[in-house]
Image (cartoon, rainbow, N blue to C red; front, side, top):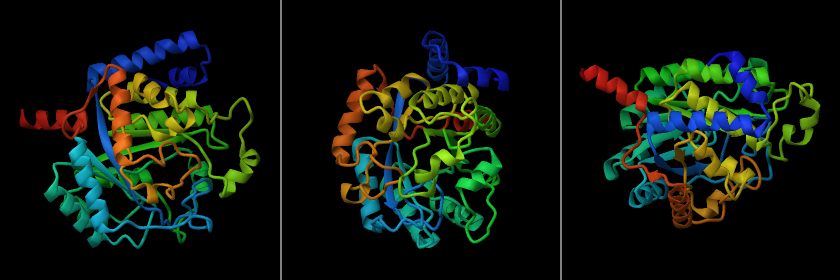
Length: 354
């Protein structure tokens, strides 16, 4: 796809014409990753964060959040539960928490790998190359690090540097791939000041990176943040401002599928938050092939408040598992078997053996 085509779809408002985009994305999904929906069990094990991102409720400067860290035993217990439910992957996610020591994290990863058949995905923010390498040696398979926006000035406005340290997430993704990780990244849609041109460049960045996993979601600011209370001050001109609405996320999922046909793309909790009745289902029908049932114990989950009113925060892991499997079957799709590794990785390995 080129920039002109991407921009045309991003600005398209006619439901009839958009049907062509939804169908093309769904066909690309079916032909390249099949009808299976892979389940990734999510464990939000710490809501401590050293960062002061302008929209996130976990930001260091939010005094109204109750902080927690799960124990090693609690995390491993969630992984065992994921294996019992038949999930292929456990996703270990936290704020950028400097108290999560590299050795402790490596021991958690080793325990999960020794006790379960699960792939381990990490989403711990920006860490050192030495830590990435230590976790890879411990058995971590994948790493998620969203670049959020390819517009550098916009990125720096919503993600202030930590201790003056410059950030280059694209470079970090290259380091992670060189270590053998499957890499995941992506962006938000509708950040105040973000334009349609910015979103088109985001899709082109995803295409250039040839990602294994692509995470896309609407911008939802927490009210206890600078952007949550001052959003209107940062908007681009109305005709250029990318909207933070449900439909733009479906467009991005569809365009991402067409840009990187073999990627694993989740239909996210944020979509379910915007549309409780069918948000996830519409994401799956428009290019996505992954969902992430939440395994975080409810007493912690309610405090992992990146944005308010998240879907499913009071459900138990058992309830979430039952609900999502029922919804997937209702779409006529199958629950994925095994780890659900990246088709890019599978095809590369097959080429190497040949």
